[in-house]
Length: 134
Image (cartoon, rainbow, N blue to C red):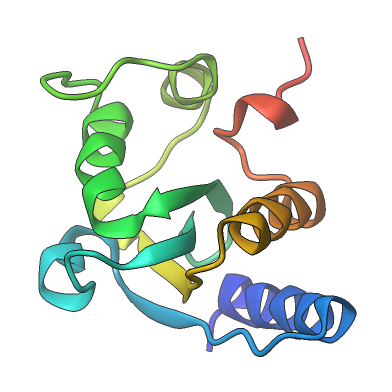
């Protein structure tokens, strides 16, 4: 198991205990999301590589990934650029082929929002606008 998977699982386990809910993390190669994530899966997701956390988001997980591929590549058709992804493309070296997506299926909207906020705070992903220091 890679460093980020271990860190993600530790944070999810502590968060699960704190929120008193069962949270299950699934993982797949980021570019293979269409084959791994069911169409209507809602919840929270984490885009990471072996040693870095790039983004934490929420919503319909499969639909959101198409936009994140565009943001990471800087090739926009469906997505709009964000400050976090722009800064990431300008300052970080990465290979999108090395990315994984970790997702936590959740159907309760208030739990989705709480979980996303906790994960952004604890993991400090590079491309989330909330984590950028100007």
